[in-house]
Image (cartoon, rainbow, N blue to C red; front, side, top):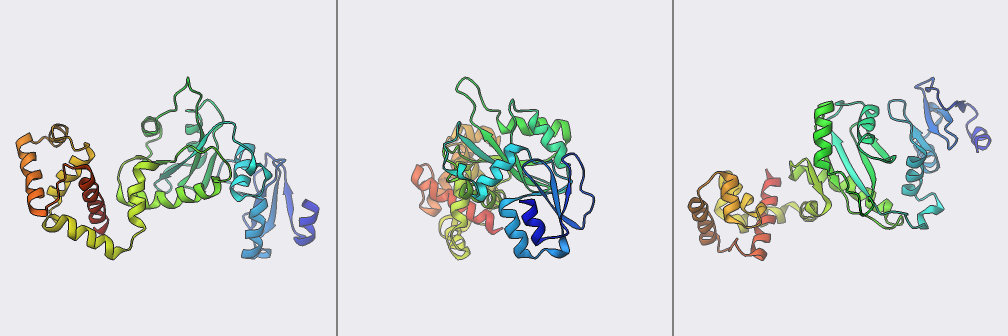
Length: 298
């Protein structure tokens, strides 16, 4: 393959596995034997880059060198391997992560994540502050590490603020590429609505669904459902907490440090003024979507 590439790019250079690229004026790719090839950037068009990246793994010096497992996953996601039709030995899931820019070196982050797992865990980077962890489902007798705990460990060790969107487990490689793209897209949407550090895919779905409708409908939903309360942030926070507490008045009052009777008064006021009985599940769902639309409007 290298000889064929040299015919197209005569100035192509090769560097051994453990070396660092000698020039930033080259675009670097990692081969399956761990060697690196560099092609002068001035000789590459956007079309050339797009084509090369379909069958070669881009290499950047400030990122961890991709493992064989990570390279196989990149090939699967690009759908350039026949393994896409194979059945995974264990279910897997994509876990999106995002940190503040320039908060931590990718090499150090990978070391910290890897230390929490008993097997080599692939991490695919989108840039220096976000990417996808590919986690395998543990055996029945083992438990996966909750991502809330992972955040605590990383915060204590590295003082890094991080968010996770945990995808569903998948049993096929054929849906991997689409699901990977969805997780990347939907994570950016989800964290504009929620300030939670960890969300699973099913918690994120209401945010994702709401994003599919246009802004005018979101405004309509907020106005029609919330009515006079749409600008009363304190009141809406009470309603939002009630929904988060599964419509349980006692739990909500405790969480808000509010007397149960005071909370009941607010709920009754909302029901009386809007005509929506927020204590009923199906009507509460409507109010929840209206709250999300109202939050996003701000």
